[in-house]
Every structure is written in C-alpha cells, then in structure tokens.
Amino acid sequence: MLAQRAEHANLGAQADRVMQVLAQMPQFASYASGREVAERAGVNVSTVVRTAQQLDFDGWSDLRQALRTEYLNSLVTTSPDHPGSKDAATQMLRQDAANLASVSTDANITAIKNIADAMIEARRIVVITSGSGTGPAHILSYLASIYGFDIHVAAGPATSQAIPVSHLDERDCLIVVNVWRLTRALRGLTRQARKRGATIAVLTDLHSSPLNTYADHVVITPIEGINPTPSLTAMVAVVQSILAQLESSDARSSAKDIEKAWEQLDLMDDQP
Image (tube, rainbow, N blue to C red; front, side, top):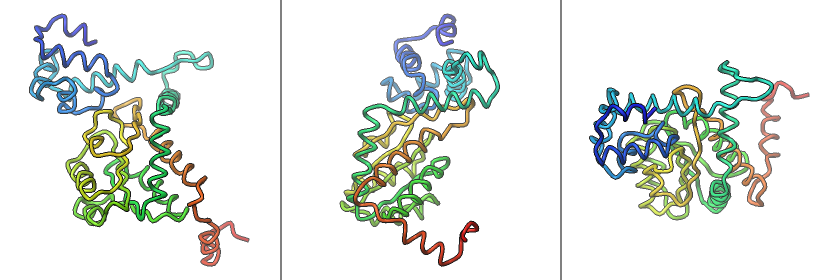
C-alpha cells in the first residue's frame, strides 16, 4: 500500500526515513502517535504529517488508520476448519491467539518474573493507568490483594492519582498499565515516581513508549484487534502471568482467611 502511494509522490530524504519506519514496523506504526513515529525516524512531527499528505492522506491519523487496516488484514490466518472465514468472532479469536503467541518472548517472560519479584519485595504497590488499561489493572490489584499484597489502583483523575504516587519511595513499586494512547498525566506521574526512587514496571504495547525510559522492567504487549478498538486479551494474560508468579512464591498469604470472612458475612449464594 505504501509503495503504491509513494509511486505518485515526490518524497525527500526525511520522508523516506518516515516511510522506512512505517514499512519496517507495521505494528508500531498502526498505533503510534505522530510524535512517536517522528522520534523513531529521527525527524520532526511536521515531517510525519507532511509525508502523510504527500501520500494523499489528510494527515497522520488518516494514514495511521489505513496502516492499521492493512496490518490487521495481514495477520488474519486461515485454517482447514474455517478456510477464509470472514466472520468477526472467528477473526477476533485468531487475532487474540496471534497476540498471545507473540507476547511469549524470552524478554517478556524475564520481565514478568522481575516484576513479580519487585512486588514481593515492595512495601506497597501502586498501579496507575487510564482508559482501557483500567481492566487489567483492577484484575492485578484485586487478585494480588487476596494473596496478601498491599496494592492499590489509582485510575481516577490525575489529582487523585498523584496522591499515592507522591507517597512512594525506594521501598515501593509502581506498575504502569498503558494501552494505546499515552496521556500527559500518566507520563508525568511515572516520572515523579522515578524521581522518588520507586521501582517502576511498565506494561505497554509500544517498544518506543516514553514510559520505558523511566522503567526498571518493561513488558511489551500486542493489543491488535480486528478493528480500531484494541484487544486486551494479551495484556490480561501478562497480568495473569505476574499473578501466577506471586501465587507460587513463599510471600503469598493464604486466601483462607478471606474465604472465611466471606462465609461469616454470608456473601456467597452457593454456601451450604
């Protein structure tokens, strides 16, 4: 698609650098901001926008949407049981299977183990996130708290998120869950935690996320779906992997006391 568009455009040297990034890093380009593409290509943001316009797009957002469509279409697999299936349910399941396969890298598995170790050693754990990242963040916090860890999700407005982050120090751990777009607040809070000496773990879908410069441990998680909406399946799988490490550790507290409290409060409908 890019080559066909470029045939009719008079691209200069800087635009060629942008084109190389787009062609060589389709997953990154499909979800990155214009600034992130510019940083990777070593140009300014206006060059990215101008390149998109030279390719006959309205701007970077328009080009990114076209790239995402092409990239997701290239990931759709077929099988003998469902040859050429076009229904959304089948395509989504196959895409999530591909995401899960690609997240299981040696680097990610090492980072997952290191994050679990950091949580075990931490006095307290704060999880910050925004938007779609709230789901995986709450799963991590809820189950880790059952295991006996002092963990709290700060997913509200930035004024509220700043409170627990401001109390962190070198004894604590900050986990940042970022899906797709990065907010200024999330970046600023991560930078503040870094200055305070906390151990920082980042779960993100971008290799070039600005958050990674502050992180001690980074897990890169694909979020490709079959439409512009990101898929959180692989991100949740990473969270479950961290929890599995916590559950298998000696630091994990027994859940029996919590189950006993549930029974005493008669909370469960299936109790005898």
